[in-house]
Image (cartoon, rainbow, N blue to C red; front, side, top):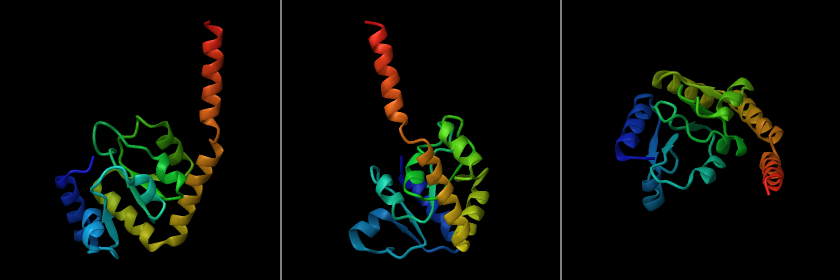
Amino acid sequence: EPTPDRAANTLAGAKARGWSIGLLSEIATSGVGRDSDVIVVDRVGLLATLYGVSDIAYVGGGFRETGVHSVLEPAVARCPAVFGPNHANSTAAHELLAEDGAKLASNVSELGDLVTSWFEDDALRARIARCARQYVDAHRGAAETTAGLLHDLIRSHR
């Protein structure tokens, strides 16, 4: 969840790299920071929408013990994503990495380098986004398959 401390740390890291930065809450209320290189999302419930208009996504949780958050949302939106090393909780994260549909940053410095390379190389960013979406497309129908299996299981136990 976004907290003021996490937002401040992210802003400081981006600023140290020379990127223009903005907080989503400030952009929404005053428009200040609308043209920033990096916009830090400091509100909940907006990610699915924001991935659709973003060039790059950092998926949180991968630098914490709890593990990475959903890597599928940016993949659906064709938004290349990077996340931290703690992703054992996500099969999709492992599979996206294997299929070049996302990237792993082992530490904050590597995260910054990776994001910088994506800002500088549109073709690289587009390739990773394309691989991410191909992964999603290849796994379509999983909910229907699961529902069918559950239906059969429930019927067999009546």
